[in-house]
Image (cartoon, rainbow, N blue to C red; front, side, top):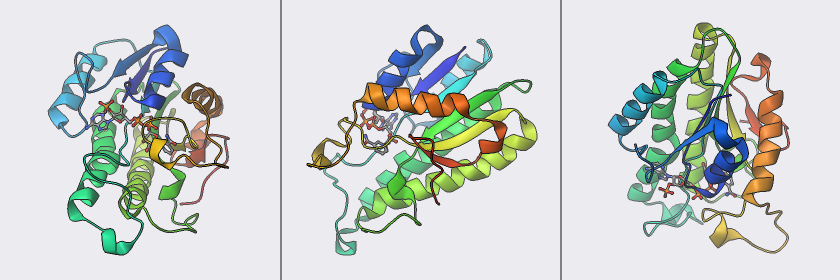
Length: 221
Ligand SMILES: NC(=O)c1ccc[n+]([C@@H]2O[C@H](COP(=O)([O-])OP(=O)(O)OC[C@H]3O[C@@H](n4cnc5c(N)ncnc54)[C@H](OP(=O)(O)O)[C@@H]3O)[C@@H](O)[C@H]2O)c1
């Protein structure tokens, strides 16, 4: 079993590396070689390296951006800021798209393999009842569309490969920390990853292109 985790220094990414054990190679902006998803050359270099190794069974994209660098999720459309929105799209949609561009071709043509990108239920348009968080919601919705489109193409080229978007639920990490509030079901990264690995292990080719929650439920677009 060979696994690659990108975003391995993050709360959920580190827990994936831990849970997958010796099978996992983790890449982040701090690893050597490093992956910065806003730098395509760094993605291409790591993919070239991975292509020389053993056949890959699982790739987890655990990167993402909700707040930081002076940006917080917007509570109102009057707070929409082009720099914030561009940053969110760069890190939540375009970066993961480049990971698909360089890593999906590495999936084996002759056996089951899985590519998972961590999305968020707030990216679901059908599930959006409370509004707000324009940049993050829109970028995750774009990510879901990119993943679904790539899965259609992947099915033609790698019929046994599975590509999904996965919502981890609310997890105790730096990303969710400013929004922790009483009554919210917050799980540790270890618990969330154990739940997500159960979902990942049960996936079949019939599931490719779909958007799942950590409990295995399929989420609306
Ligand atoms: N936590 C939750 O409650 C929750 C809920 C729904 C969805 N999610 C999704 O789950 C995923 C993981 O989030 P998390 O909670 O583990 O957050 P996190 O601890 O903040 O991890 C996010 C990771 O993304 C990496 N990243 C950001 N910009 C990058 C770049 N340019 N190149 C490479 N890596 C970059 C960060 O790397 P550095 O370590 O180098 O900064 C960090 O390791 C995200 O997609 C998030 O949207 C989380």
